[in-house]
Image 1 (cartoon, rainbow, N blue to C red):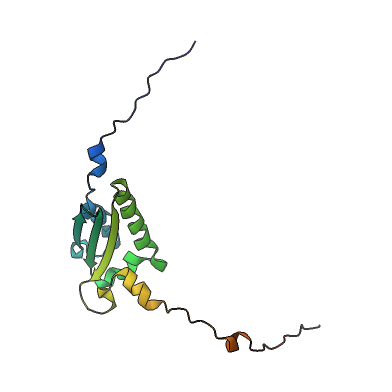
Image 2 (image 1 turned 30 degrees about the vertical axis):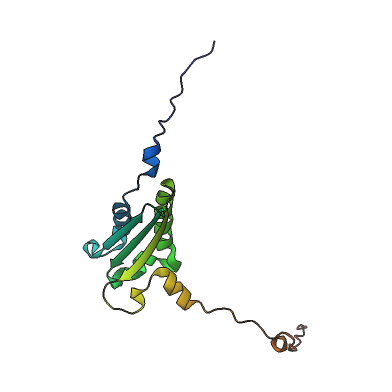
Length: 142
């Protein structure tokens, strides 16, 4: 005896896949738990339908920067991943820029610019540096 169950297939609506998610609401939802004063959060979203790109710019108090970025940038990377996943469902690419709203120093840079400035470019070793003799370490005998 076999059961004949009909399996419900999800309705595929092609217009639903092309609709853009609510990026402003998503960013506010993800960012506000990290902020001491959530009302300081400013989110600007620009969507280009022709290029299928989304630019999101956020600003908040610089005192909350450490909490938002997290240790080693883990928090902000997780936020970027969630936003990129939402954009991927709509076949869009997303760019998230973070700006400070108090002082025009490092806080005024986007995360990528800040990382590029911090990491020095690798310097190639010259042949003289590679062929320098190194001291010989003798093992200790006890």
